[in-house]
Image (cartoon, rainbow, N blue to C red):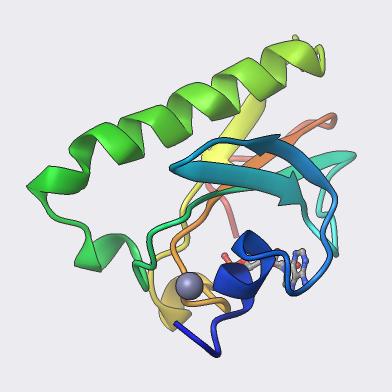
Length: 113
Ligand code: AMP
Ligand code: ZN
């Protein structure tokens, strides 16, 4: 996807603070963090949102969550952390390349706003 922001980060055409990278998945610091720790975990494959994922993406989605857990452990987010996928503009999605937010380092309320 030529014009997709996160595809451009994946191809290193736009800089980002990478914290994890493999053949399928990459993760980087959110440019506008909503908590002391705020990381975005993305598949290299361009999926606009969770709604476009199919059963063949089950392993990929699972690995994204496991990478979030690993990064949370590395960052000592022992008091709790949150993983979030905003799906669709009504849920706050603003970049239409699937990504999992990892938020930590402060207390979170429930329900989310
Ligand atoms: P969402 O609103 O769920 O689609 O999340 C998109 C996230 O991408 C927001 O938290 C933005 O702050 C973040 N973001 C947008 N542009 C960049 C960028 N160039 N580098 C890092 N994070 C970004
Ligand atoms: Zn993309």
